[in-house]
Image 1 (spheres, rainbow, N blue to C red):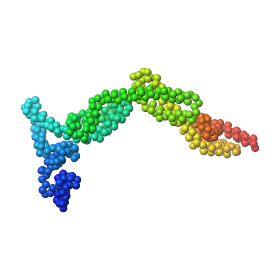
Image 2 (image 1 turned 60 degrees about the vertical axis):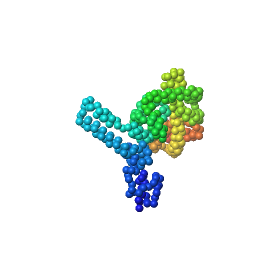
Image 3 (image 1 turned 30 degrees about the vertical axis):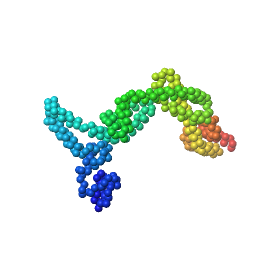
Image 4 (image 1 turned 180 degrees about the horizontal axis):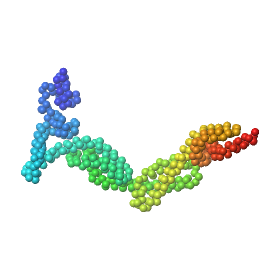
Length: 395
């Protein structure tokens, strides 16, 4: 039978138990418990009761108050609120209200003492921790690149709530002293508060750093950029070798992508006119590289398509050889042509056959077969008539 109780967590125990397994404090008899004597502290926020030794609320984390003191303060506040409400409900003109009543109303409306306000802010800061972490991540992401006007306005609009919240805090220095465990969080709040007041200044500072960083990168890489620009122009202007082109793309694609991530070229060019030529070289290199990359990609696709179509090409040639063995009547001729019309259209869309034949010799036979099929249908009626004439002459 449970006859004892822990005065802190209210867990019940059997008669022979002496201490609470959870809290470690002495147990008391259930029938002798005096609630008011033991639970002498209260949380001013959630109003949970605590034993006299407790200092902070387990739920809210704010400092506890003596229950009787809290009760008196609350009672006094209620009286003052009621008085204030009565005065205004009776349409008393504030300008004609006796000065001591006005003072009482003003005092009532601002009756929370400093300790209450600090505890309230502590509770709000604890609740904001996740929001602060997310804000810091968002700010880091925003400042990781050059910030244009739309991004700047969007960020400020999306984070208006936290900016407003941090600017409402008035006791951050006191909280740092009284609640050292919250020191890092309070520092973050102070930083966000400062940022909200100097937002445009911080944006400009971040952008200036990005501009200087990109200028430094351009200066450091300009020789390599010019060399790659010349090499690419040479390949494009000559009847380029496929392997050379493929090697260049594999080697330089990542580097071109880094150049493509430069965001401040136009701004740098405007601010520093001597960078105009450098900026134009970089822009032209990126554009030419992407065009060249696209062309090689089309060649690769066509190379794969040749392999896919090869079996069908061989079948068409085989069927044609069968057709050529005798006289080709009009019906058979039309059937053969109609059967392969769509396929011939596909073959005519291949644009790089000659290039692939030269640069990828292992596909030489496949390309020869494709050209043979195309020849059959280029002058189809003539070829059919020629076969029929030869057949008649051979009889």
